[in-house]
Length: 218
Image (cartoon, rainbow, N blue to C red):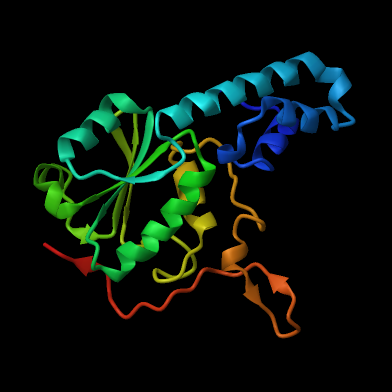
């Protein structure tokens, strides 16, 4: 993927994708950059292209964490509907699946470049067998229909298997090339900030009570 100019990325990332309704507002924000003159046309053109790309993605249902109830429909999206997909195989009554759902929903609202999807394992017997999904939650990242990463339970996320932040999950998906660039920051993770003893905010890990081990549902 072509890299985005840092100034353009800064404007885009301070205006969440769901707010890309007014291109003039984004252009005005870029105009405020004192370093614009040296790369003015290049940056304005790139911002215009990113704006149109975001509009296209939004029309293709990007920007939402979507539940798919039919495994053939899921396969169609993964294979031909989107270049990058993050698929969560879930059971609604599994506590850890609920935690993963909340992290993925936040990422979906920030990253329009990928589709974020979930499917109940009971609705996907063929895929569960083909992809050997045995432990939940199971998140599989796809690039042009090919699996490029698999997260089993909370393995490889955060400092412990039971404690991880949205940023940890984003970092993992960035490593697989499913996402383009980091977007989770202190503002987007405000819900996961912990208070220190004097009451000021400080970045912390998202901690949620969990009495289960990884759910082996098979």
